[in-house]
Each structure stands twice: as C-alpha cells, then as structure tokens.
Image (cartoon, rainbow, N blue to C red; front, side):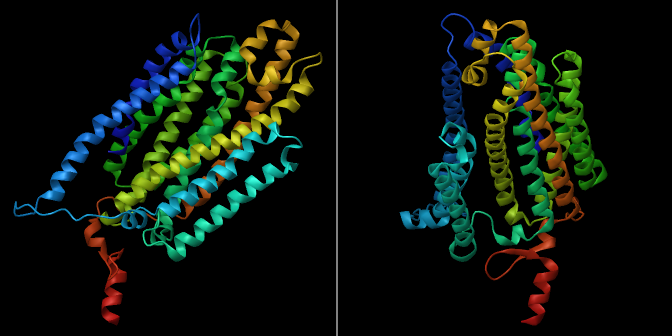
Length: 410
C-alpha cells in the first residue's frame, strides 16, 4: 500500500522534464510560472480528493448504525485547539523555522554567526523546541506523538530511518541540478532527465520490496540491505559527479541510490506500522510523513548553510583572477558565459568541491541509520495486531502481555 502511494511520481518525473525548458528558457519564460502551475495543480488536486472525503465523513456523522439520524455534536474552538494540539504544532513550527533559517541566511548578515540577530533567532528556536518537549510531555492532552510510541524501539528506529533518508536525499540533490547545468553546459530539462534515475527507481523498488516482504514475512533485512547499498551508491556518485564522467555513469549511480532508498524506506514504514496496534497505525503513518517532510526541510536548510558558507572559500581558492562572488553563487547561468575558459573551469572545480563535501556528510549519516536500526526488534508481519495489543483504562494501546499483567494485579 505504501509503495502504491508513490507510483504516480514516476509520471511526474517525465512530465516535469518536458515542461521545464519551455517554462524557464527562451523569450517570455519566467521561473515563477512553475510555481503558478504547482499552486493551481495542488489546489485542484486537493479539491478533488477532499470533497468526497468530507462528504462521506459528513454522512457517517449524521447516520447511526441502525440507520436513524442524529444531531451532530457541535464542537467549540477550545475542543479544536485541544484535540489537534495547536499549541504543540505552533511551538514545533516556531522551533524549526527559527532554528533552520539562520543556517541559511547567516552569511547575508554582517559578521555572519556573530551577528546578534542571527544568534537571537537561533537561540529562540532552541527555546521553542525545549518548550515543545515540556508541553508534549507534561501538559498536552493529545500530543503530536504519544510517548508510548517514542518508547517503542522498533517505532523509534523505523521513524529515524525515514528521517535520515530524507535528510540525505535533501543534501544529495538540493544543488545537484544546478551543478549539472553548470558543469556540463546543458539545459535544466536535460539535467533533470539526467538525474531522474533516483525518482524512477525509488517507487519501483518500494513496490518490489513490498512484494518480497510479503513473501518472506520479514522487513529488517531489507532495511539493512537498503542502507548498505545506499551508502555504496553515494560513494559511486563521488566520481560520477566529476564534470568529465559519462552520462551513463551518472544515471546508473542515481538508480542504485534510488533503489536502495526505496527499499529501506518501505521496509522501515512497514516495521513501524507492524509494531503498534491498529488504533495507533494512523498516528505512526501520519508521523512518518511528517518526519519525512521535517527531514527534507532540515536537510535543505543544512545544505543551504553548508553551500553558502563553504562555496565562497572554494571559489577564492580555485579562481586565480578577478570574479564576482555574488554572481558566481547566485546567478551562475548568466555569469558563466562571460567568463574565459580558465576561469570557467576553476569555477566548476569550486562547485565540485562543494558537491563532494555534501556527499561525504550524507554518507556519514548512514552510520547513524545503522545504529538506530540495530535497536529494532523483529516484526511478525502475519501477527494479528488486535490480538497482540489491547486498550488500557485510558484508551491507550498496550501489548497484550502487559495488559494481562495489569489485569492480574488488579
């Protein structure tokens, strides 16, 4: 089921490539057109999906099991704020925004990280995250993620795998398209097609891994195999990102990383849902998606910080003549054609050094993934989750053995 969610992305891979060049290159082209299309498409898609869901939910609320009608219970604003943990969501948003934003924009401020505004923003983010922890553990009636799930080693490990894979994906591809355009002197459409082996292999191997897990009734080995192959693929991308490497080498390295990431991600998602009761499945599925988004946001911010802090030093090292640092970093496509051959080659070398650093950091995160997966227990994929878990007096799901012990004590 998880794998089928991502299969439509394969279509988007080729559609986006066809639309990229007409929207970004040529007379009258404007990159803002891309965001207009995305906004309209997302709005129409949301309307198509949410309208029938709202309709069926409304019918369910109005109808009793015996077919009679009942007055729908009216819920006030206080109930809404408590039920959806608005305070927790607000603290989480503030914490992430105020912590990640300084990483990206610090270089644009005078004195960089020594600037009081940057330090105040970053410290405010840390305080918000600390307040979030206190709120979620002490005061929230409906925490974003119940502590019983955090305490489950298999859930924690599986969620961490998804988070780190998203971080590595962001670090690996945040500036990769731009690098391909700069280093190979090709259009954005050609660069997108060249790197899309990852996006095609990812959902395909999710589906194949799902079928394999169903056949062998296990998921942990697929996580480990995926992480190992993913690390090897990142290692292969180091020589593949050399400006003189063949296009075939680039595509193959992308496919290896995408296949391994899809395998590890689907296996970790299945492990997480198999380690909780059916009452908690919706919670962990939702949080899997949330952590994936947070991981990509964190990875993007970290990548932006590294890129803006590290690339200037590499430009200064490689380029021997005069150059415009701002143009070289922020508008290379317009700046490079005006450079001589030697300076252009030196600029590409500086870009390559920055790509190498991002790849090395992404590879090092694989060690963290291996550690968290070692904490995970075997999940019996054929086990009846209703039989394995029961609800306690508070309505929380607990393992059947623990519920039996509590019943005996009482």
